[in-house]
Length: 76
Image (cartoon, rainbow, N blue to C red; front, side, top):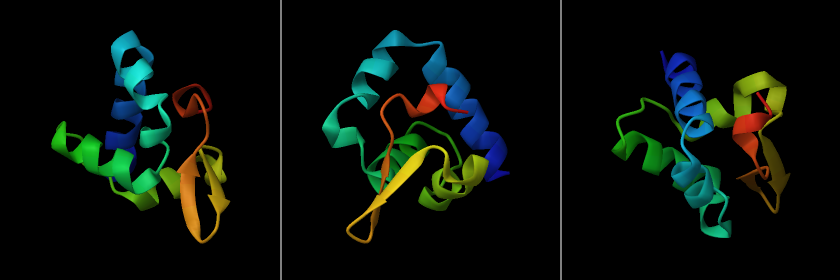
């Protein structure tokens, strides 16, 4: 179910300029932070969903942590 929820989140962000602006900040780059925000917004996603999606196309790995690439919602 989480991959479907992640796709629903991606679609929601693509259609909402305010969300895009919010998620473009450096504070929203951490996968864990975005996953927490998404769950609070009603999307059933976890950090691993971002990492696993499209063979890692949405994330970068650095210093033992994952960060979302800029404009990750367009990389799907």
